[in-house]
Length: 224
Length: 224
Image (cartoon, one colour):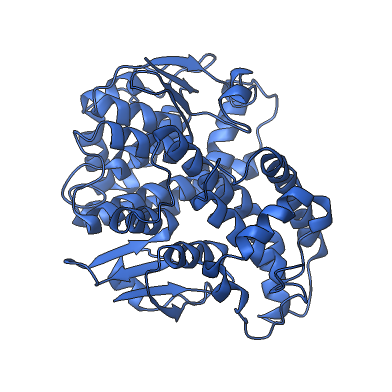
């Protein structure tokens, strides 16, 4: 059995769900709020934070914590379909952009996404508009880089779907949930996202409902 | 031929040098200042930042950008000696702590290390003491976590040396260069570091001299 501790709107947890979905690996989910990590985590690994995958489906139990450990592990255990290309140079490019996405978007997560969560989920009485603006600005600068990639490549890292596409789409989907994606400013990226969004692995992400929130109208719309 | 673009004091670049050293893979280095990325980078990959490894020693050229892509690549191309354990659960723990180290220390790099570089290398006229203090505080909180790990484990991720040890030691070595490591507050961690520091792969790191700076007196001392 595979068990994933996650918080539905967390872009990194979404990346793991998409990867498991692409590989058709069934899994159970347990919700883990970022501001209240479950007690089980201390037993799994000291200092563990979601996403956490515990896999008892193989010969030996595997505790994998964080996207890097989880995704490299499922790629090794279930190589088909590949999320890292066979050719070393293409693998390196997929890993570079996957990591780029997690690091670059962490600023957007810490500002824009955190403010939206405070606003809607945690019902904070005040909204920090400076932080929101910083987040919107950070997001736009990342989108122009990604739009330029989407102009010249079918998928983010090249000719085939890789973990870089899943990671980038997972992040954008979380911002899109709150209606924060300026799609008109990034038309090539929008085309690419609409292809990723139509994949069966994306359906559970589009069905997410976070307590206290309502997704933006076009959020689950494949023709947005 | 392997060519590494790096900046000697950068903890992530040091991690790559240590990994190549452990695997006895010879490589050339080219200095790449973080504030003046080389023009070659645009050709290697859009938006590339150091460390960058270009490997033409195999059948096909590989451009790997960033620690994740570089180290997973060299582990695949040169599996011996292993920097990721054979057993899946242990691999996951090594990857978790490797990633933990890069993410947790990024705050220390952005504050303490950046201030030291501004102070000594870039000869900034003013030192931001608030930022320095924030950095020292952030560093201390990470060290207590690591000291607790070192109390119960021979190596950071368990019984054998892994990439987690190299990454953590690479970060600490950069802070130690400027005399910022409060070793007395973390005795078990100091023991562990002195073992890692004695490895042949560490020698080039201990010989580093960054223009405009002088390393702390004990920096290269194996019995510090």
